[in-house]
Length: 79
Image 1 (cartoon, rainbow, N blue to C red):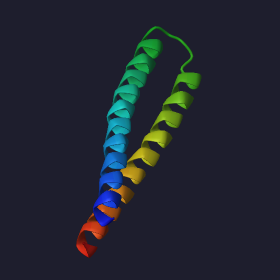
Image 2: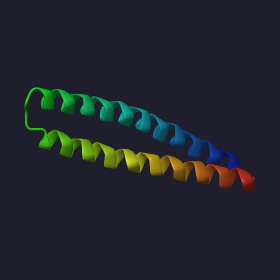
Image 3: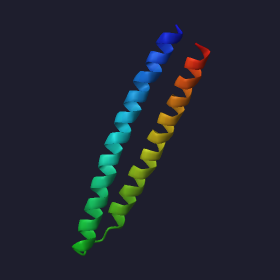
């Protein structure tokens, strides 16, 4: 039973890692867009607001990953 729980946690960890990787790409792209918009003289307030939302979401993904790593470590120590 414990091995099954660890396997499930590892699946969730893999998903969190994919979300983090995707989030990094989205954040990088949004920063590039902001730079281009600013260079072209456009209003960047909405783009910066969206970037802040992406960064907040990324922080949640990172926290989820860290929580899963701790849970896996604890489960393995009990096993």
